Length: 200
Image 1 (cartoon, rainbow, N blue to C red):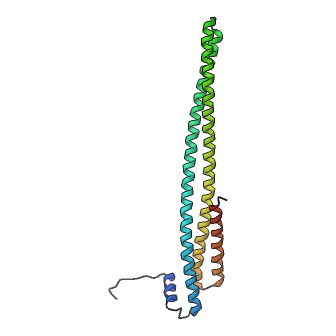
Image 2 (cartoon, helix red, strand yellow):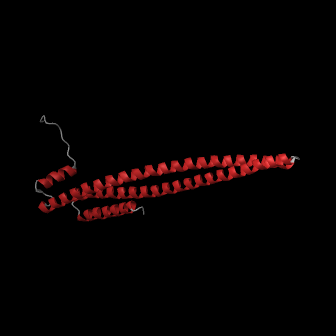
Image 3 (cartoon, one colour):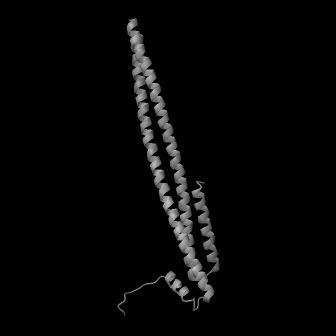
């Protein structure tokens, strides 16, 4: 045993070495070497594209989570505003009751001024609450759109991974139909990736 270390080569490494040496042996000669080089190049390109798709899938999933979180915050803020609105409504109702029960006209005018102020404040609070609800709805829609895009990226990445697996099998078995299948599945993956990029 030599002192240079122990090396384990996978079938893919063996086939690439075989191709570099000219494809001699029992696997089909120079034509086979060309096929090996072609599949190796294809695998490298598809793996790179798959890594980009995987990154995009992770980014869109993170964005969806952020938008969903923002929607929850806006919903909480809107709920707080509606509670404040309800509090003002209750105070206004008490002021109206006091106005109706007091016999003095000067007191009635004082309570009416409060009622008018409460009504104005309620309208302002209502406007803020409705705006917050609209913002929450918009964030929910953005989150759903990002999740849809995330699923597209995930589907595209999966298809490219299957294509790489088919490439490895085609490399080992030298079956032409597997090579065609590899190209077909990769085309599907690239197509789905294009749909993801176009937000479809």
